[in-house]
Length: 250
Length: 151
Ligand code: SF4
Ligand code: FES
Image (tube, rainbow over the protein chains, first blue to last red):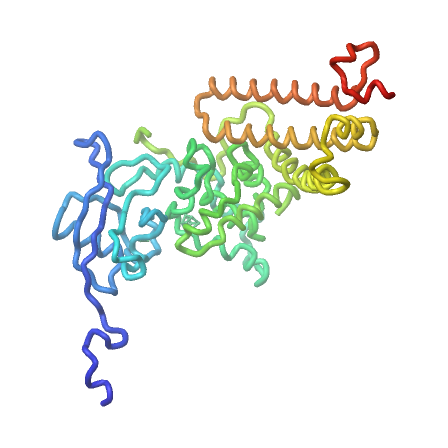
């Protein structure tokens, strides 16, 4: 074969190995007065994700490192973290896609109360989520199947993809200021039902979001669209809710 | 945040967020968009007439401004520019206060100060636009524009 001189590492698709430095923002409320940054060197493969690096740290180097994860495959939304200054899912971010010549900074998402290391209190986030009534409310009795056309379904398809990871809400500068704003995730989940032709309570949700802390606080910063690991066009969904309120109907 | 018991309201329980006072956020948002469109046109018209047409920048002096304010067209032009821009700006300031000031007391003081200064500026500006007289009768000639003597 003509490739006889190639070394194994240049083989296409070969798994490479490298050492990366992770700088993790640590905080233990029982000991520390202030969060601090701690470095870890880990041996990683090019197929590894940031979550694998965190696992390596927790399993081999420092068992006190606290973070949440459950499915480890980007669907439970256990939660996002701030990796190199951007909100992402640790379980979906490949280390090789980051700049591994520099240390990788990992910290908890912002705007929600820090509990320990990478864990925040998600309750304020879920409180606004519950407030938009994110469940189907059909007035008619379910005597027959509720037919929906392909177009009617497509209307809210994008917002059904939300996994409630809070990456968007915790990247929003308006949410950071006083945490009173409903936040993009709540609006996305309201959008999912407001534009569902089978739902009859769109008006109620539009009223809820036409609040001092509702959609009008959105400054179209686009941080949320940028942050969403599911690729939802969050800012667009918010804009659609705004125009539905102006129109007075979805 | 205290982590006391979290009770999830049963579905369909009414929305409970406390609402005090009237909510004009929707109208504020609309105002910003609509006034923005008009302001773009008004501001570029203003810049064009003052800085580009005629002799350009060098033409601006007391006489030039006095001449404009003597014309009802420019009076109304400046009137709309003043009101649309000042309210637009004040509403923007209000938004910034809402973002950065968490203490209700401080918020109230700043909102009050903003409202008062906007009101005073609107009143003074409107007064000047419609009552401006470059050569007030009977004034000390040393204090008024030199061309007043020629009139
Ligand atoms: S909209 Fe995207 S970023 Fe926001 S909570 Fe849902 S999945 Fe996460
Ligand atoms: S661990 Fe489930 S989404 Fe990341």
